[in-house]
Image: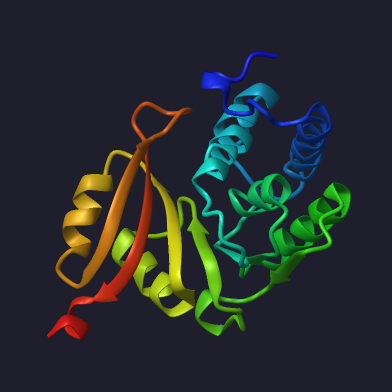
Length: 205
């Protein structure tokens, strides 16, 4: 099947098959608990699986764990764990969603995935090479979490919709950072922010 803009170019058939198994599990669980908006399988494939997978080429080459905040049904954290092989920590406060994440990680054979059934502020996390979050909170809030969790030299990957520029402007009052912007390959109205050197403005005084 043709992928939008070759999002899965270079991904093995075996890995794509595992992603489709993950989607099938998600759609079965979604009839019992609300994981994603109800959608046809191929719509969900593009909206969630491919939208998450497009972040994989933006991961740094340096080793280190990935922490995904507000993981929900595992986007983008579980997809990135499969595509990158990194130790990955998924933070999700809803225990029903955590049960799904446990089953999905088992199905995908991801032994390096740790699930934290906790609020972000209370989770005991390692210093991360990457922090990711999708459709979780405004950028100023995300930057506070990222600054606390990231190791020196770490990066944050935050997909954002039409409000990306406004959120960057709002964040500039309290945060400095190096900003890289990448157009989404699955949604023309969306942008992927790759942020590094995140520091509070007060630290610059």
